[in-house]
Amino acid sequence: MIVNAYAAPSATEPLVPTTIERRDVGPKDVLIEIKYAGICHSDIHTVRGDWGAITYPQVVGHEIVGVVAEVGSEVTLHQVGDRVGVGCMVNSCRECDNCLAGMEQYCLKGNVGTYASVDVDGSITQGGYSTHVVVVEDFVLRVPESIPFDAAAPLLCAGITTYSPLAHWNAGPGKKVAVVGMGGLGHMAVKIAHAMGAEVTVLSQSLRKQDDGLKLGADHYYATSDADTFKQLANTFDLIINTVSAPLDLDAYLRLLRLDGTLVNVGAPAEALPLHVFTLFGNRRSFAGSGIGSIGETQEMLDFCAEHGIAPETELITADYINEAYERVLKSDVRYRFVIDTASLV
Ligand code: NAP
Ligand code: ZN
Ligand code: ZN
Image 1 (cartoon, protein in one colour):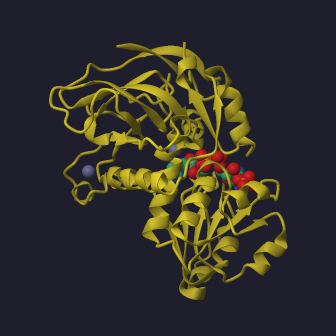
Image 2 (cartoon, helix red, strand yellow):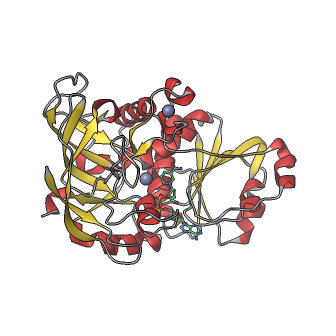
């Protein structure tokens, strides 16, 4: 099947309209007619080669929602017409310790990413900036009816990537949680942590998004450009979720953790980040990382968002705006996720 898409021709050129081939629907496959695709900062890191060389042309996009258009003969989980989603992975080995533990995002052989990854047939996966995708049924999520469809796509990456560490490190009543960076991931972290019952503080470069932050569920909002912020908030937080796409002074943020607090990095700058171990000795602090979430946990997150009336704040765009959207994301000028209407992929 040949379908319309938007692809990066190289690390330095703008994305352009193109067509790509999708595989035939196998017995366990689901063909999805994509309706909306979110723009994650990881898409930009990937096409620009921040994380290493990739093969071009490359279609990115791993925040996908759409409608099931066809199912293979052995599919039992989804039916034609269902509202479904696909996130950052489309397969895994299914036999390593982590896959068997239901944490295929940490597959020891490397999960098959939705794009720029080697698929089981040896081809390079192509992502969601396209009109259709074929995915094996157990990597397809159900999108609850109550979540507006045009806003749901960012849950598939930004939602799960923040839900997973918030759940794992027990964000909830009595816990003080800070979110560093109020972009795509950050604004979802605020909404989810608030819904979990935690006291939420945003640490943003400036106060220009303060009104939004407080509306989305933050209790406090500070500018990190103000040195006083770091003095005032020393030894405060149980959990800090760092969503920033660029290197940060980790020691300065670690000092904001109280006894046994943890700073979890989900932001993925290419550079190595230095830190002084002495900062960890104080308050017995931990520095951790977290990658997306499992398929089971992604479904749990979607159901949690439906139950709590949570949906991403989105700006709906047509495909011809993707390159401008990238520039705006790079300038932290996104409120708070660009979502491509795939009907514009003509
Ligand atoms: P985004 O929408 O661009 O948000 C990042 C936010 O970080 C910006 O809105 C900005 O917030 C802040 N920021 C940007 N540059 C900064 C700088 N130089 N110094 C301080 N703060 C800065 O990006 P995103 O889509 O949320 O993704 C964020 C990062 O997470 C990316 O690196 C992405 O690749 C990574 N990611 C990781 C995973 C995972 O599994 N771990 C999954 C998805 C994405 P303020 O304006 O509020 O300061
Ligand atoms: Zn992503
Ligand atoms: Zn595995």
